[in-house]
Every structure is written in C-alpha cells, then in structure tokens.
Length: 515
Ligand code: F6P
Image (tube, rainbow, N blue to C red; front, side):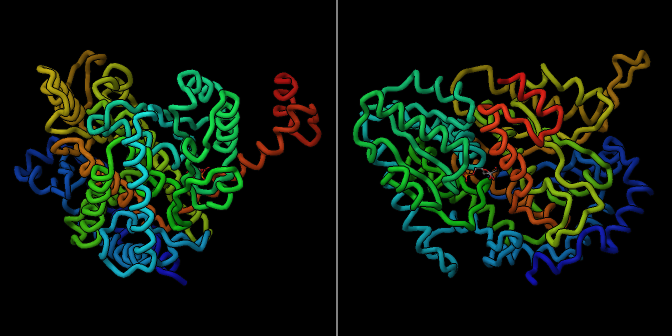
C-alpha cells in the first residue's frame, strides 16, 4: 500500500485525544484579547513570512499548547512522508491510480529527475510560443475560453487578477455554463475573423464544454469563418478527441494534473496570452517558491502546514463549518470561487482514502467577496451573527493604480475589520453589542503580481493537501460529481419524449411542467 493508505488517520492518534482534552480545558474558552494581553510577543510568534506572502495568524483562537499538539498530530499522521510521496510522484490519488504532480508544472527546467519533466518543459515552451504568437497577432482581438470547473475558474480568476499586467487590445471571455444565455451573450460581441476560441477540457468529454464548443464552431462556420486551425485551439489530455472534433492546434497535459490544479498547465493559456510568456513564467516561479517552502521548511515555520493544522482545529474542535475569504483587492474577485473548487472538491469527502467512513467533519464551506464590498453586505453576520466564521483577509501593500486616496482607505478598512472582529465592543443595550473574539487570518502581499499570485495559490493548494492528509482522505479525486452527470444524461431525452417512467414523483412532476 502507498503512503496515502498506510498512515494513521488524525482521529486515530494520541495527539487527537490530547487536542480534545486541550480544547475542553482551555481551547474552547480562549480569548484573543486576553491572548494578546498575556503575551506581548504574540504577533511576532504567530506571524510568518513565506515566499511572497506574509501571514499574521495571531488573531486566531489558538495558543502555544494547541499549536504544539497540532504539530504532534502532523507528525503522528506522517504528514511529511505523505507530502514527500506527492512530490516523489507516488500515486497519492489512489482511487484513480494517479500521481498528483501539479508541482512539476512549475519546477524549473533541470530541477529534479522526474521522468515527465522534459515533456512538461517542451509543452510549456510550445504553449508560451503560441501565446506570444497570439499576442503579436493584431487581427485577434477576442479570446474565448470555453471550459468549466478547473478548466475555467483558474484562468478566469488569474486573467482578472493580473489585468494590470495584460497586453492592452485583447479582450478575454470565459464561457462555462451549458446555459446558452452565457455563450449567446458572448457571441453577440464577436466577429469570427477576430476571435480565437480555446476549448479547455482535461477529458474533452464534459457535456457543458462540448455543447458550448459545438455551438461556437457552428456559429463560426455560419458567420463565414474560415481557417479553423487559426481560430480554434484545444487544451486537453485527450488530444485524439480534439482532433476528431476538428481542432489541429492542441496543447496537451497529463492525467496526473487534477482539473482544479491545472491552471499551471496548458489550461493556463489564456493567462499566458494576457500577461505574456515572461509573466507566465513568473507565475510558475512564485508557485515553485511556495512548493520549496512547503517541502523544505520545518513544520513549525511551514505556512501551508500551520494553516492546514488551524483548519483542523477550527473544523473538528471549534466545529466552525464555514470560512470566509475576503480579498481586499478587487482584481481577486473570482478568488473565492476558485478556492471553493480547490478546497471543497478536494476535501468535501466523508470517507477516507481506503473508503472507510469518517467520523469527523471535513471541508468547510468557503465563501466570500472582495472587500470593502462584503462589509456592506454580509459582514453584519460576521460581527454579530450567531455563528463564528473565521475570515481570511488578503491585502497588498502596494496598489497597481495611481489614484490618490483609495489605497489608504482600503487598507484602513481591512485592518479595521480584523480589529473589530477581534476586539468587539461591549454595549449593554444589546443591539450595539459586538461580542468580538472572532478569528481572522491576514495575508499580506507586497503587491499583486504574477509571482505573488502564484505563491498565494500554491499556498492554498498545499494547505488543502495538509488538512486532507490529516483527515486521511484522497484530496485528488471527485467522485461526488458523477451521479448528477449520469442522471442528467438520463433526464435529457425525457424532456423531449415526456417519459417519466421510473422517476420519483417530484422529478416527474417538474419534468411535466417543464415540457
Ligand atoms: O465535474 C467536475 C470536474 O470533473 C472537475 O473536477 C473538472 O475541473 C471539471 O469537471 C471539468 O473537467 P474537464 O476539464 O475534463 O472538462
């Protein structure tokens, strides 16, 4: 059996029991304000600098004793062995018999001895050469990415995040939904001779993507478009299927790249077109720096490890069921959606890697919006609601614009929110009482650029690996999305035929109304 299967699961360890006792004795009642009063070095001891990301963990409901036990837990669960198995190319995705080597996509040429490294670099070079060619092709004004899930969220998020680094003169569109309103709305803005369609699908079988791709091809032909080779490219592991579809320009990747870990591969082509080959290499380099940090830093100074352990503490001991992502950078507007797939598709499981039911909670619900917008919408609940929601603030010291008077306001607000959540404000009257002691983590980038974005995303990937590893689950499969796909295939023809035989009464009733 691989390392993924033979390691102890968190709830089977001595450290787990000790954590339970620690929580009952002091952890449950830990008060942040008291924590800062009694330890003047709390900020210094609970903040750390990882590549491109400074993290302040000091406003979390944790003390040195719980930290120490969580680190014991990581050791008892053989986290480092599991991490090394992933970086060693072992089949840590055991239910699909695959390695999880997204980290290889950002390893510099010549680093390590992975057998796939040469092919990775040859593909990257070809993809980036193509990106430069498209950038130089002034006749192409619109790039349309057709893909869903991991073949959409990463590039969409990163193109927006790095808009300040993008070549002016090209517009990017992302079509994911099988709902034709989305594609129709985009097509209305396009002309075939100035459009490049990128069909992004790891499998090249996903129903939404193939439906949109067929409609895009039909539109292109109907509008008199010629030269499919110039106007369509495919990003896929299934190059044969792309060929059958009629696309000859293809950039491949490998089955060991999970969809939600794929923006570093050919799936990142829209990003490379937007920010150029050099920018894309900086994105990869930033992520690689975080890979090295995760691999080489002792557990107690290892940021993904510390975050993953905190996630366990919050989910399984404090029993917080959700976590809010609050990027105080409007360019990170799609980051919460991206992180939802990353964390919830990876760790939203209730059996371990051996298929045994888990007795503990796993992935929290992730949600959020950029600040300061969230403040004027749902922050009320964060401050005074009945549930405690740990918040993750993300800010950049330097803005990427030169408008005066904005960035100071933004930074003042993000600091104030973290402060208000922690400090609270007593008020006898009730309505104006802020309980405080509400936890948050603060991530600070020097500025949002390709390298820091790469590092931030790799940080989240590894943190998800850490909590998944301790829960003993396979973070790299996603069987939970299969059933809905199968049932939709069964229902689609029934919408035409009206056949409701064998359907439950609710589905049958709705189907009749929809015809
Ligand atoms: O339905 C879930 C999923 O398999 C995701 O994991 C994946 O990112 C998405 O569908 C898209 O898959 P593909 O890239 O193969 O079209």
